[in-house]
Each structure stands twice: as structure tokens, then as C-alpha cells.
Image 1 (cartoon, rainbow, N blue to C red):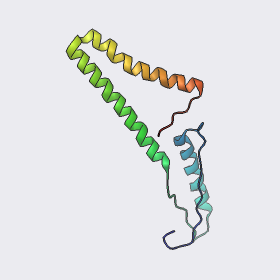
Image 2: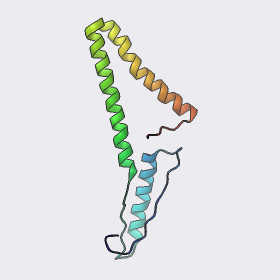
Image 3: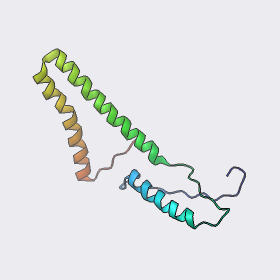
Image 4: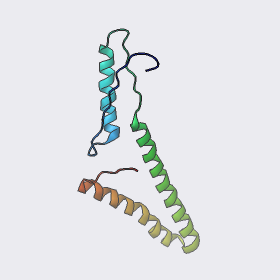
Length: 112
């Protein structure tokens, strides 16, 4: 690596595990291991997918919020505040029910 000898180790997270929780444990373990290394030997993380997954989940959350605000705004303008509350609450409730059902059934959330 960078013209020096190196050993690369890769880890694969099972689909039943949350990547963010696994990455936190792995980083803590790596920090403890790094303290035990002799001088002249370093530890460097080459690729950490947990940051990418966190970014993607934040994008999904922002898209849901934007969609809900747009739906509420348009129905408020077109149909009044009562209809806006009913229609506006349907979007977050349906998303919550889907995610809750996936959790109960043990269906993992994957991205492509």
C-alpha cells in the first residue's frame, strides 16, 4: 500500500446485522488492537461502508419529509386544513407501518 508492504483484511456483514452498530463495535475493537501494535506497524481503514449507508438513510428520511411537506402543502391549498391533516398523516403512518412490519417479520432493509 503506497509502495510499502501491507496486509489487507476484509469483513462482510451478514444481512441480519445493522451495519452502523457492527461498524461501531468493529472500530472500537480496531482502536484497542492498534494500541497493542509495535512501533513501525500501523493500522489504516481503507473502506468503511457505514458512512455511505448512513448518508443513504439520511437521504431517504429527507425525501420522506419533503414528500410529506409537499403533500400537506398542496392538499392544504386545494382541499382545506381538515383534508390536509388526513392526507398528510397517511404518508408517514403508511411508511411507519411498512418499516414496523418489516421489523416484526425480520425482513432486512437492502439498497441497490
